[in-house]
Length: 326
Ligand code: PBG
Ligand code: ZN
Image (tube, rainbow, N blue to C red; front, side, top):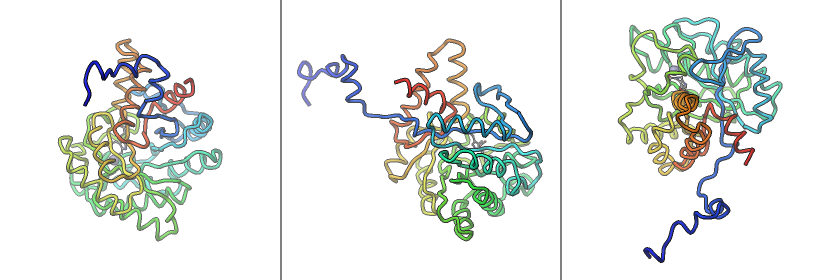
């Protein structure tokens, strides 16, 4: 390689137009998926304390919000539900009249240009807050898969455009693919939370989704934060089982995994910038310790640069507005 003074990297940095020309990473609002939280009731819009700008929304307000998102040009939302009734087996998760099923129907009726993705897990619906059915303190894998499959089918019947299992049971993608296909929903893609870590960054979400486990933690199914090779095996299994899009979660602290997954499989790859990542940037921004907008954009560009094709992010609306200004 030629060296100084022949080679000067700064030659391409002096002029902003040249900088634009050589930029390697693009970020578009079409990359964003916004998580939303549906609650029972009417005319409810309660801000989630640890996630400023994010709300518990009753279905009427959820639809209004979705219209705005559609108007902004964000292509997709992912729905989480806080049920009116929780029990040991999370029955509202697969109730055709559950909170999410009602929300899907209401949104799909009003928003024709918005993809409705649904998170499939049990933890928002179980009285104990665990991601599956229990035997004592153990989460049963195969028994949980049956319920997850029922939940996914119920979402598809309500009109969901895409199913996103976040539970990390073994074999759940296959179980969901099978039940969807058997019921004629072979066109509905699965976006699997394929490499999902047992992360401390989910703290604010558990307030948002009221899904803190009553005892123990999620380490018996979510991945150990120290492991990278295992993520590759997890993702490979999900692809074999029929995942159409694979997700890495969290995003920012796991960019190495995002990169490896994209390189290895060339699959449409999603990354979830989770509640704690969002909350930290917000909190530091509010304190004036960082330039919030700048760090928001930097965090999103970093996730794209690592190899993600799409980003689930609570910043979707704010970042879309910034991109529209440019
Ligand atoms: C449900 C689920 C969680 C998140 C998405 N789906 C919480 C968890 O696994 O405890 C976290 C999202 C976030 O923190 O933004 N299993
Ligand atoms: Zn869960």
